[in-house]
Image (cartoon, rainbow, N blue to C red; front, side):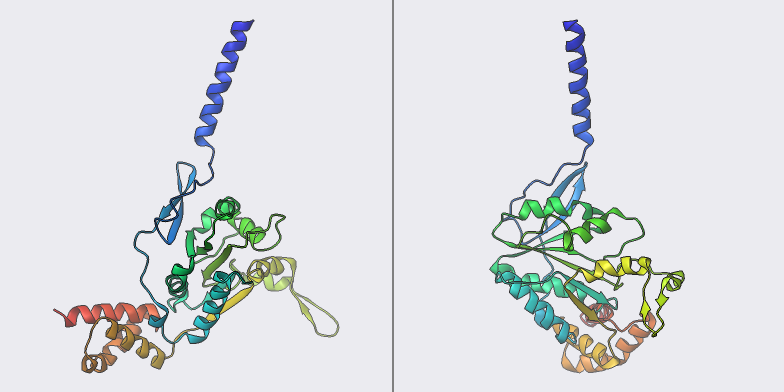
Length: 289
């Protein structure tokens, strides 16, 4: 009997060891002095914080034609770094207008005052509670950053993010904020058939249905919305000139580059800051040859 019991215990121990090898493990604390930014990744089922060795060097002064958006995000980030009340932020709007660049510029602006950034993919949002617990006792101030955030129906990260923003029994620690960028204001796909769920009252009021309310509810949990808009031709050319100056192009050449910059934008179908930067790189590279 004892032999059979020992054999059974050995098999149970072996089974538990195999289960532990495949079950997801919480992220281990990294060397917090190794970087000012980290990427959260899954490696063999375990969460890992990988240091970003070369953080984008973008500065606030290098972002043009978005002064209003810049002022709001810098103010919120400064409040956060100072230990005052601040909001989670959703930056939405036209592509290539500086949403993620503005977040990176704020990191560079406040890094020497203890600001740190952890980039998390939307697929890993389910691990947000573990990530918040990991940094909860640290003296630094952490921005959990998700770039180009949007969800399809039923994705598990949606519920985790919604609970973490507002509604979970466990409150996020005071040294963590969530900053997210998205081209969608409501973060979920919207369909024409959902308009049929709206109801109308006798006095003319319109009320959204439950499906629409659910889609709006996530974005509403971000305390601060910052919207970005397509650039006008004059704004686009101003950004082109700023980037050409950055790459060391002479003033006379900058003026001569305007027609080429407009053709470049026409071919791309966009007058965004990203397109302006890409043109400036191409033009300055050709000019230096």
